[in-house]
Length: 116
Image (cartoon, rainbow, N blue to C red):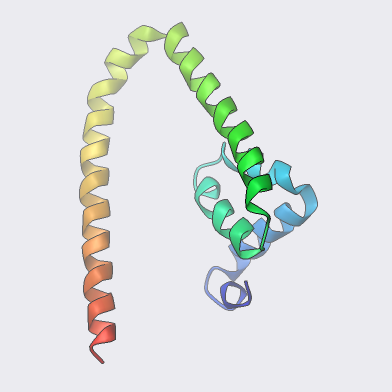
């Protein structure tokens, strides 16, 4: 955590840490419903030495709630799926290309760094 507080992400990490300290496990549950935060919160909880079984409990509650919301939305509005699918397919192709590019760049930078 000390290294994170000294990085460019210190402001964001401080906010996540503060929310985590204030709300405890419920911050984990709420983090599942906010893009970006849901990706950082597991890292902050792990770096904070939060007990994994307790994290798993809160994450399971949030995951189940997330699943039920979207499952029931799909059942309530099945026609929306047909309209969303083409856009989703394009988004997934772009996302896959972006992730592959990022991974390739990270590997190249990592190899260059190791060769020094």
